[in-house]
Image (cartoon, rainbow, N blue to C red; front, side, top):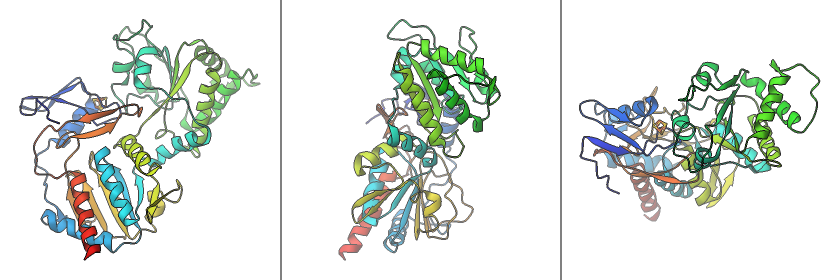
Length: 427
Ligand code: SF4
């Protein structure tokens, strides 16, 4: 797809820096980069992506090489491997499609860099199902938003601007009431509506959230709590919160699995889901799990669509196996005999391993130890077009090419590696 503004000083873009995928963004790059309708996180992403002083030359054991030699070396490593690990997986739909095809040929294990968080959500969904909503529903219908363990705006900076304080609703509804429970207090308090309305902030430690959410469930189910305080919060405050949720016309409960750094976070998420289910007996409520970034929603949707499972899966003789425990990057790093690390949006470094390592990704990835192969590739939504799932997985949005570069795309490099492997097998 052609971006009509590509050669102009102002570029219309879709920002891939967080799961909101804002497609109303305009960039000016001359003389310095500035962003209209953006945020600081988006500016940081594009400034890094537009840095032209970074080398785009492939490296073999730290030494400059041409692309063909680097592709051959990567194919050799994978051809000599019986148990490769494809990790990081920071990419969009087309890149993931190519990786799945190569994984099938090489019996690889696949794990996304943020799947520790995704797995907590997945386990909940697989165990009990859940009722979640879309960003459009929040924008048009939500009247109470409860954020548990997250201030939302640190990870998804324009969430409130676009979905809560917007005035372009389909229906006449009041500005949603905001309640933050166990979120970083200063960040949460800063979410003040344009009309000056302050959010309600209920302070709690992340480790106390399981106890608090269970207490909310007990109150919602009409149980009496024989204590003045639960995890330091007055029982009356929790009762007030339950009443607010019960009387809402459309309550939305938001959580971030990556912020729930507690053992068995999936049980707390399950408890949040129970809260939502119970509210739906008499009113309307839905959940919104925040994504973690680096293309996690796109990668897991593409993997599920093509192989039947999200990542933490392994191909074996063309059959996919799924195991959220054994196929984690941490576990597989102790077993794998080759690592392919992919990170195209951000320069996320590859983990240390004794296994031969191929790194394909952002040109500015730094190394503690030079990998056997490094192939810099284009950044989706900057150097080439792409396709991404928004965080609510309800739609995909096109990423636009904003500038020419001499960088290949991830899918081109992966397809070249696969072609070399296929030709070697035929020879
Ligand atoms: S809110 Fe997210 S998608 Fe929107 S401009 Fe900021 S970082 Fe980009």
